[in-house]
Length: 292
Image (cartoon, rainbow, N blue to C red):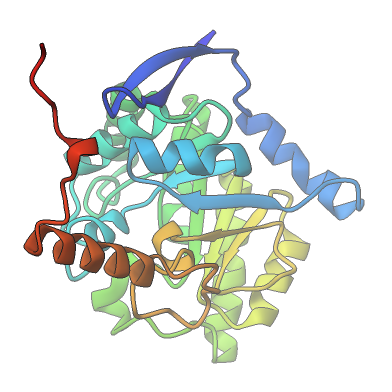
């Protein structure tokens, strides 16, 4: 048995409710590559989640929930993912695990928590998995990170790789533009993905690259590719949930908006504010009458 969480409508608080263990496993996700290639499996669905409630809503529809370091911008209003800490990732990772029971939960390792050495990466990853109950970690980087991926994988820590546009390297890259427009860079991205997969990553995220690069990687590696600004030919897709739901006015090129939450929330809050100011809210239905 596992523990998931639902909203108690009488208290508006999350309370534990027992649910059968239905969570997907890392080996099952890795095996989907062959099934997808054979036309017998469906592409993998991945979205970011940072809170219990969002995890509850996304979990039934996703194969993987990514506790992304994008929370630095989405939740904390930071200018990039660089300032995000292990403590932030642990707190939000634990919330997402508590709010889910189906999807494999993957946690981003933040900048500075794994680059120094495989040993540093192991300590950081072990901390995140112990504190959260998540199944895997994700780290950015190509061939230079292959020894670290191997070190973690050999010690029982499942790893998702991340190549192409790597947001933690925004200062070195000079921005968030698409990568792989030169032949040399395109070849390096493909080589990076192959190195990470060969080192033991069970999946590889490909972000912000020329489409032919994502297609080439998907053909050349034996583990699932997860695209974001990559190609529909990847073995799966990931987006920041708040982007695809339309919670922000600015939409990156690679995002399809499936809703307009920002507009919806703004309209409802405007109505609430107007009713408060005219004393139309609360009414007798929302207050407590004296007994007797």
